[in-house]
Length: 252
Image (cartoon, rainbow, N blue to C red; front, side, top):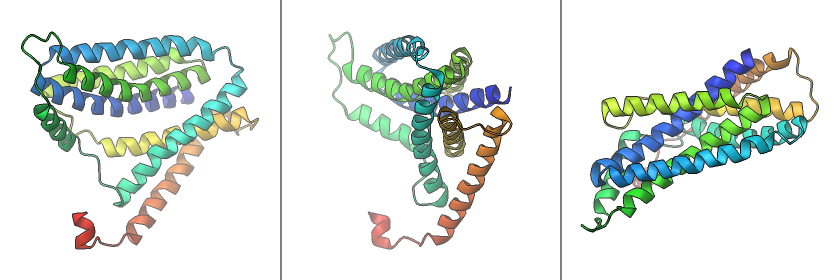
């Protein structure tokens, strides 16, 4: 039960983060360039992502479970450590915090400066391409998490439901507020998601290599706690060691 809850929470949180970033791109392009071509691009990306899930999900079930867990664990460990590394650097001040409001303004500026679609053109290819690329790239990360989590635990439906719930919630809130979700604590969510992905990577990689974890799936909670303490301690150490930027470095 605990592993199912963590699986749902991790998939939901990771999907929510990616959905916020995709929504920012789509809103910026749609507001400036119009919605028809933008939504066509979103729909096309959704079809591609659905095809990937439909193709890879059943195929992964043919791989022996121990081999699958070892490979997925290694991938999640590499993937999660990237999230966690960036989150630690942001929290310690070595990397600027992600700002959806600034990203929205930047996307709007780029959309406004792009060449306008011709009056006879049926599709604005700039809007289509930007929306398609944004949704596809962010969606691929969600797809990776859904497929790996679902296939490894035999809970593809649960992982897909968590991702779908996150996307629906983010889109619904975005429609209501009609702007980027600036108040979502995205930097903290990325820290938590990186921590959870890394923990699952350690757990499943160990299981695939033949490790018998104490208390079975409950060991995931111990791994999360240990990595959380290490990450927070590392953040505090880096924050104390960070020197103020010189004027030249700040301008750069």
